[in-house]
Image (tube, rainbow, N blue to C red; front, side):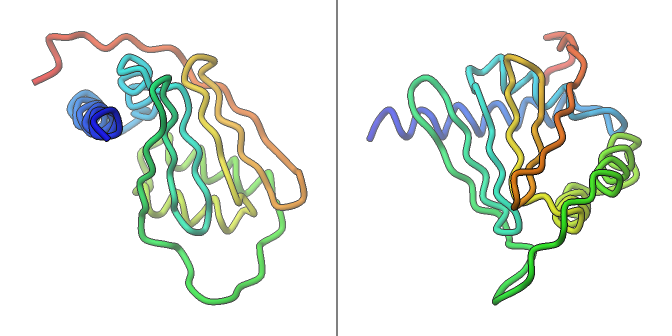
Length: 146
């Protein structure tokens, strides 16, 4: 149980650090780098449930967000162009994270996986479709961290 609590603490501290250095525009690479530096290897998001699993060498942590839908719904068809539009809108700082999740779900994404060591995000549809996007390496200067 102690290791589990340490993993939770590690994740929460890394998220707090990330939010302190993350610019509004183009902020995802800073969030990802802060998590990578904390020893988090991967992050797997399930949509529309908004369940997020963080994997570390020492184990995993799950965070349950507010689901995008409840009840029974059709899964939207995978639409790569709509997904790319949602990504570019978010990268430009023109959407909130909940709006980004909603847009990716409406583009047919049922899961996405962030590999922090490879700096890649793989967005997946229900029928095996996928779109892989790389993000740039960034440097987090310790002096920026409060």
